[in-house]
Length: 196
Image 1 (cartoon, rainbow, N blue to C red):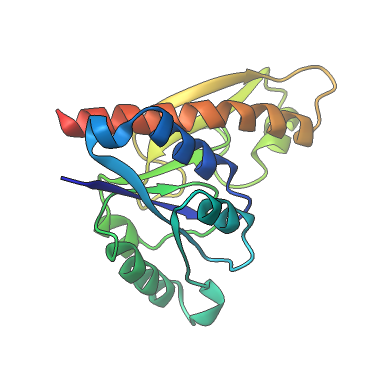
Image 2 (image 1 turned 90 degrees about the horizontal axis):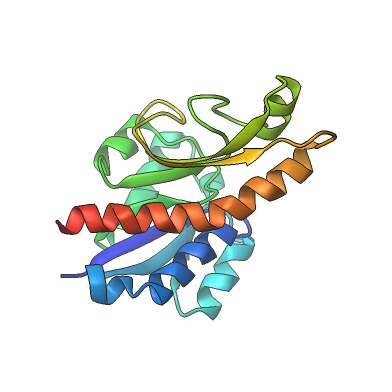
């Protein structure tokens, strides 16, 4: 049985491409019956859409600007997602706060990666906030999505040192390089647990 993965993006799609590449190199389809079936964005100009198409992955756009409320946007987004019968919905730089109704619809199969060591620094500007707080380490967290922003069971984390003189951009680049291996590995482990 196919375990379709739908990835939601808003930007360049580097984490999305890491997942697509890992799914192919790691033979997820043979091992778990899993494949990346679609990439969906809330922005028509998201760079990751072209990358996905270049790699033969279906794409779609559901612009949040076309809807008067979060609820109506999430309902339309869910309609497109459900067209792919997803076993897993993966947020990869999807810059929208999801409504509780959307989250409950995909409960137990909605994953996110966040650029901090949760529960520290939920929300935005994580790297600047970590530096300003005097932290010695930062990192990234893969977690199941719940109705509370950047909470939910933690599946995996990667730790990155904060170096003397780091600015937010330098730290962000080091964290992102870790995200590219952390997220695919966490998804693969999740698929393996679903297959048991």
